[in-house]
Length: 129
Image 1 (cartoon, rainbow, N blue to C red):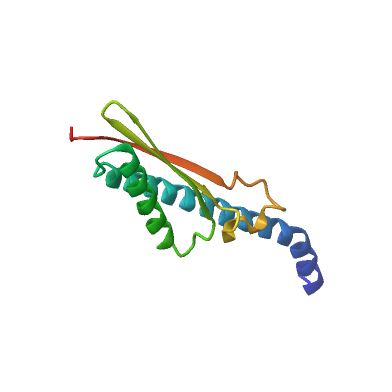
Image 2 (tube, helix red, strand yellow):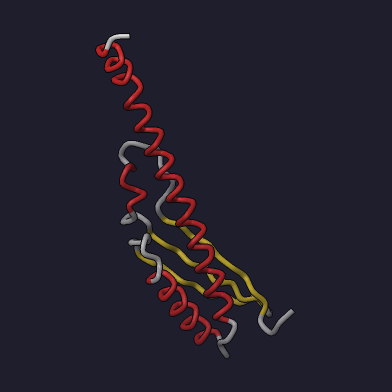
């Protein structure tokens, strides 16, 4: 096998290999970020039940989510919204995160990537079981 034929084969396969590896990197980063946003919503919901009223629950949940985002070194995007809604004895905390600034969306021009706006929620009962 000649050196020239190996270079020619890589010229055909190389770009495809790079595209596949970029996709693995991008979607792996998306799943990591989405899971982390879900965990932030879970933590904020657990913290929010300590509030005595809806306003205090909103403040506690927002503070908890902001502190959690600050500890994630791979998340460079913006925490767009933290919402707290109550229906009876159930409190739902929603967290929206804009991941456009995260490194995982660097290949957005080359690949069909998921939406960078990631929204997750968690529901918890106030007052125990």
